[in-house]
Image 1: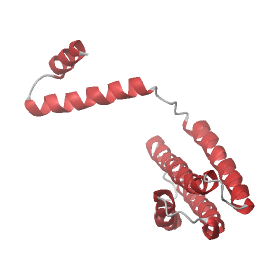
Image 2 (image 1 turned 90 degrees about the vertical axis):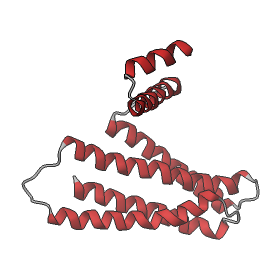
Image 3 (image 1 turned 180 degrees about the vertical axis):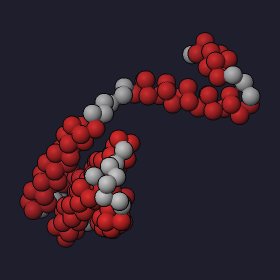
Image 4 (image 1 turned 45 degrees about the vertical axis):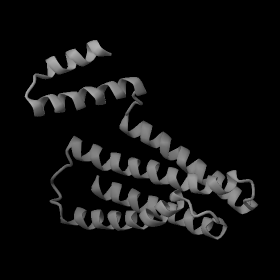
Length: 167
């Protein structure tokens, strides 16, 4: 599992680096998206190489736990989607302005296609489902209230109950 996800991390880094290298001559705008891509993409190859070395140190007879497998795969998907999306937005900042050359427009289509593949792979592998924003906000609010109640020594039920009636 560690070797596989490390290899996938290196492949992702190579893909994003290649796209960035091809895009750079055409990227005029110094957007936060471009800056983030330039700063973070080199890190992913090093992370993958570190994990490959670590995989060589692990005992060969130990299988990864379900949590370890999910964690490694989820991290890969998180980085693909986060930084692939950031690179796509950097390119789209240029193409959306209407002045980008045809080479950058073609590259934008390639990056978008790769990003779409990564989205599908993340959905297929993790089985994760999107949580509707109202439910997510409710869970976050309840967790915040529970934490605050714990700090002041009130019971969670008292705090959540009074907050719920106020809503």
